[in-house]
Image (cartoon, rainbow, N blue to C red):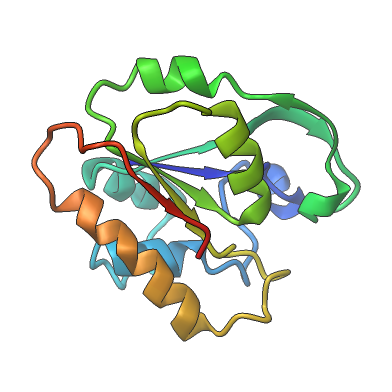
Length: 162
């Protein structure tokens, strides 16, 4: 499975790590998906290794953009990532999840016609604090079904917006 965000925020860019903002819930949410509640306590390199070992990859829908601050609404002059080529290079990929509405809008446009399962998730960003953590966690836990399947492509499906 591949989890796509929009673009790293300023804290993540400064740290050189995905989801580095201390209030971003990504590591907690994905830890629940893979049953690793200790994921947030691990050093970054160990966290990414655990994700890879669990069959999860991270990437962004945008290859580059201009943005003041970290809000997706401030993204300007965005250059799309080559998601079609990325997906073609991952023959065992069964699903693509989008972390937040901006990633889902852009990613679905870029992957139009893709036969993989596309899953829209509520954003893990601290800017998306209106949704309670329990609700976010419940929606993220839907990803478990794609990790428990045998390594065969699933039938085409579209889960849609949460």
